[in-house]
Length: 265
Image (cartoon, rainbow, N blue to C red):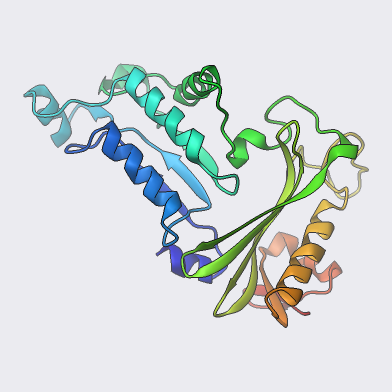
């Protein structure tokens, strides 16, 4: 399923539910390691939903009769901290913990701020999370230094293709400003995602201190085109683009071939 999504130019995400019956923290952590070490997987984003015991479920009956022991809040925070330590910089942890009120949770982690608990635990151990969400500008409360913004590149194989993750970052402060995902597979080259962070800037306004509309997207697209053409000998690049951004890609020389925007390189 991940390969079909990525081959189509879509992002591929995975939802993981640690603490299920028959598992334990060691096996759960190994599953997360497999997710990123095995090139068959390597998702673009991740959601972590520790198993919760809710009334009216079969799991509730198992728990009530002593046949199931869920993760505690402490154990779940420890596991998520360990997961955050191994997530690569091209993956975004979208969510940790479901939005279910603590009064409804009869077993399992009850803290809604489980992500923050895990982050603090990881920080106390001298580590840090490299996922996209923890580095994106505007989230960390640290402004990148314009003169320090530089190109970074991560290349890896994933789901039957070659992925190149190009980013513009202030590496010393671990702040991510913008990135592009380029995939090379049997279909050729595909830009699966182009993203600039920061507050939205309307088209008729100047960016001012905001980080959008500063040309980062254009620079990333030019670099992605050069990589596809010069390193992988791709002659035609396609972009996954919704209706609202097709005009932007037309300004870069792309034309519509539904559902993609395409350009000869």
